[in-house]
Length: 347
Image (cartoon, rainbow, N blue to C red; front, side, top):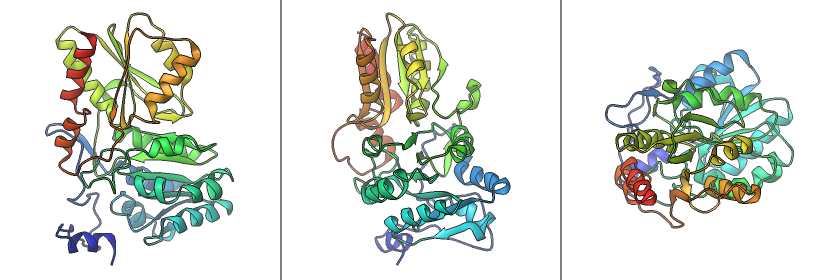
């Protein structure tokens, strides 16, 4: 019984599948983070990997029974001879990828972030990172991007992986970020962990003349009262919040940090060092061990002390199950909650 069958057994309907009609659509079980009127792009990871595979025959796709739920099924349809379904065996998945990397391949591995960080940490550390192998671990459901509950909510994945030597960590914002990050991490000579948005992914960064560069943070807009340093889809929220604050005559700058490790220290220090601005770090991750603590440590170590420093992050707790909009409001990472908190902090 695979995961889809088990979900159906639990009373959750599985999406109908017709293998004779491959489409760029995803299951109805995959909730989108996009608002009602927001532009989206379907399966940007899968489509970008297909394009990469056309010019790089060494690129492979591997998954542990989750091709459809990580958008890797699109690569499997386009390049079936380079796709490997490993079944519900995540530890085997990582070591198989390591073996293929030893033979000169560039494996892209997909699963859920909770499974990669909790179940396979030692296998990634000893089999992939210590060997410096070019395995790209791309994981869906990072942070609070599912209402399934604590078993699937990887709210501590960045904290777990930040301590692993030589592992690059990428947290893209939207469809454009993902599409551009795929070839960039493939070109990187080493292991990468990328937090993955799936299904119909919001598209926002094309409005800001943005281009992904591994290891580089990018200022998307400027403002004099508050600097929001963000990663992942929280950059999308930060941009929305900045527009709301602008309507109240509060200038908010947004610095997008798609690479959490290694951190773009020079850019962060330059932005945070501008006098008079409160610094807010916004992340789809626990308040423990993520981007917020990384930025705070950097500022303290470098002697750059902003007037006020605050975090918008998930609590150090096992979170509830439920509808994503409700959960995002409850835990303070919706645009409405974030705007209210920043106004309160500004006094």
